Image (tube, rainbow, N blue to C red):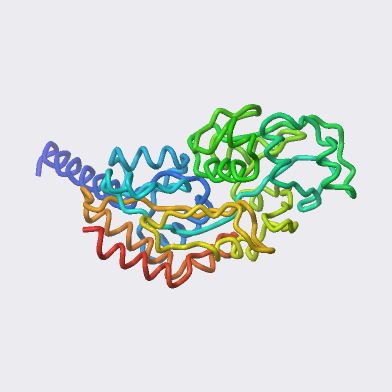
Length: 338
């Protein structure tokens, strides 16, 4: 075989190899919420080792995930701000919950350890409205009589991107503060009255860690992984609770997953042990996917995560979906995704 033919064969082989690798890498593609990224990354690593199939997940925020699935650039979108049944039907999408977790206030104060500072909803709303400006404000001192709070200025940190974490956080503030509800309201993106913007749970965690006097809000796994100082909170029943598996589970136990599209908001749930800012994170997929093979591969991954991923989720203080709910979700897959 002459040199030209050898080069031609080599180029064809290289092209085929590149296509095979890129096609396989794109088999399970998703984008969206940063809230579940730590557990999706952990699941993806274990799944890759077990099946040799990878997950390409872009942690870009719920707003970005919704845009990408609607643009059909990914196999699945992920959002912590669930879509209502009308929007799902209009877009030809199926929605199901994947895991639940807690959103926690995190602070950066010298000498203060996790759980030493307590905040209630009304005070948290005033901080994010810019009405409480220093850490030794009377409202915070009253809630924390045993803590020596400094006169340090409060640096509010919020999300700069369209965020399901922000949706749940502002939903909570709207429930506990009439002022917040009327002046700002709830949404994945709002006009923040004050503070610094940061992209993703990752960005908020990093900014709080770097900013003295800061307060922000992140999914609890980010607080743990970044050794951030979380606050405790006063819940709907007037009880002081810490962010932990039991308090997230107590709030999640109130969920009614029989509603269309599994639409659930889990903030400000009743119960003496309930964490007040608990949330679920959701997957969005097409009922009639353009690439059925890719859709089937994604469902295999989600099935594996439901079957084998609970322990990994619990280790990061996420709440796995109950077995009865998983059974309902699998029925939805069989009935709706063709």
